[in-house]
Amino acid sequence: MRVGGLDLTHILCMAVRNIGADHALQGNVALPDNLDAERFVLGAIMSSDTAFLQVAGTLTADDFSLEKHKRIFLRMSELHERGIKIDRVTLANELMKHGQLQSVDGLTYLVSLDDGLPALYNLENYVAIVKEKSLLRRIIGIAQDSINRCLASDEDPLQLLGTVEEAFIKLGDVQTRNSLATPAQIITEYEGGINAFLDTSKRIKGISTGYLKFDEMTGGLREGELIILAARPAMGKTALALNIAQHVTTNQKNRKAAAVFSLEMSKESLLTRMLCSAARVDQQRFRAGYLNADERRLLREAMVELVEAPLFIDDTAGTNLMDIHSKLRRLQAENDLGLVVIDYLQLMQGRGRFENRVQEISSLSRGLKLMSKELRVPFLVLSQLSRAPESRAGDHRPMLSDLRESGSIEQDADMVAFIFREEVYRPDKESLKGVAELILAKQRNGPTGRIKLAFLNRYTKFENMAADTGEDVQGFE
Image 1 (tube, rainbow, N blue to C red):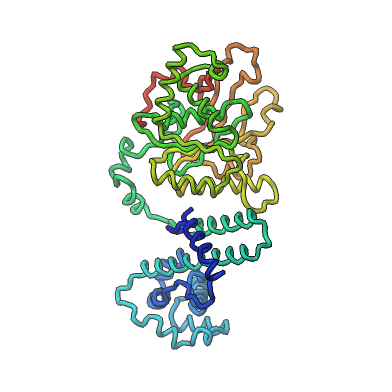
Image 2 (cartoon, rainbow, N blue to C red):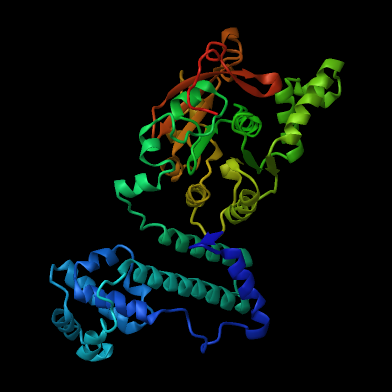
């Protein structure tokens, strides 16, 4: 995990390495700061109180290392909120009202704040320096507290790890909140510039799933998105996720790596599924060993394709957010990672104390959303549904309210899709066999609706309906 450009694992390893020598950070070690940058920020605000608007969105009083600088900035904030011009006199008066003027070394120190400040000062860089030093101090503080608690040995290690992990995740989240950008900045930073932004044929497209109607409605799976794929048991959510992962890793026009975290099935079982699906060989015949020569040939061809695919499977039981994050960062450093699949959300474990399971699932879904944004990779996360669809008379199609232990799943997700196969509820009706619906119940940036797919139960494979395969979906590679 990285916080503000710093690797958490490296930080903790260095801290632990030094425990034997120092047992803890010593009080005489100076914490990172840059007092000149702090003085120049405060001096610039007093020189022109409009500068406060440039600073207020990024810095807080706690970002300053000296207590007197914290107090000065806090009083500046209060003056600004009341619409009073910030200068030496008003600031000194405000400090005096709070009995703090002498504690900041009086009016003499306020006058000295802009000493050495250039006529054309570089406020943006001064603020960045102050913020950077503040982040380093916060990291040290969390690490110091973690070391002390470890040495005390009076807490459950997993609970302690959970609180440390949460502290660093929150710290990283705080650093990325202040990311307001003007339209000009957005276009300037957009790959390809304004021409690419306005020309839809040149804009970056999502990753194709291989399902034409779905790609048409969604634009594909886009980086940083959390996509929830939910269904009742035996509807085929694992099968559909694996079909999509296979397409991503074997698509010759735009091949990318995919990581599959399976908390339910072994990697051997998953590989068997993918192999039979790709070869269109009956899984029961494969397991029983009753294969003819043609089926063996198809399996060999499918195996060659799968072996060459940049597909990575992890079947570690009880995996958690920190495990997934560290594995994905290593994988992304070596591969063009295009998709992450997690099967499934309710089997993940949160670290730390939670009042109930809903809170735990909410914490996990929020963590996965943040991870997808940081890594700039779409996360396809499978989820169970409650029994509510079975209890509804007539139409058993799932709804958003059916998400099991939903908490904030719906809120965090950019897209929510349900798999529905009516043949499960009406097995006697021949016309329903092999027909599936992918219900797009939520999409932040596009329409909702239903997409019909064919389900080949023998191969646990979803395919486009025959009527859809003749359509050309533009913009996908």
